[in-house]
Length: 260
Image (cartoon, rainbow, N blue to C red):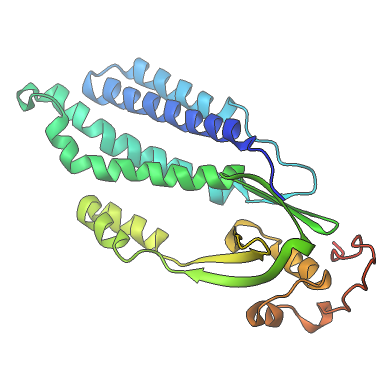
């Protein structure tokens, strides 16, 4: 089953939150370190922080699971603001003190790419912010950039595990343009992504990031008890004590969820 995309407004709010805050932080850095206006710089930081904190955040439905906000959203955002402010404000600050450079544009050739890497970090944090998963009865509801998707157990042909390593070119590129800072970012991001791939009868797939949800094991158990076919890796991941009989045809799915 599919649905409309109410996520567009949610994503737009999250993009505006980070874009406005980043512009204010860059402006504050230039005002403070470029022109020496300390009060103006502090005001810019305060307003940017207020925009980030007090703009409305997406509401997660009752009973849904989602990322823990501190490690998956707030910390990446902090790193993104630090990188973006440093590398995007630095050419402007240098241009203020050295007018002979004829503007900051030549310096952006060196600092632009590391600065724009913050956009990738913001993409990850926004995805973590808006993503949630809910299992009710014999149906899965999943929210992501693509919208809110509802899938009945009967529409699933198989569920399998997937491991995708990061692209090989990412770490060398970060080191080339970011030096030691780029190496640090590369070490943090250099890990494989683990997904749960739900194959549907219509031929389409839905990928659920395993690291996104602390209780994804409950989904696997619910699918197993609902008669959904799992691959060997997922079957072995379920402890024998959780393997109960599959419900008979027509039996209610209310008891498919493990006790909490």
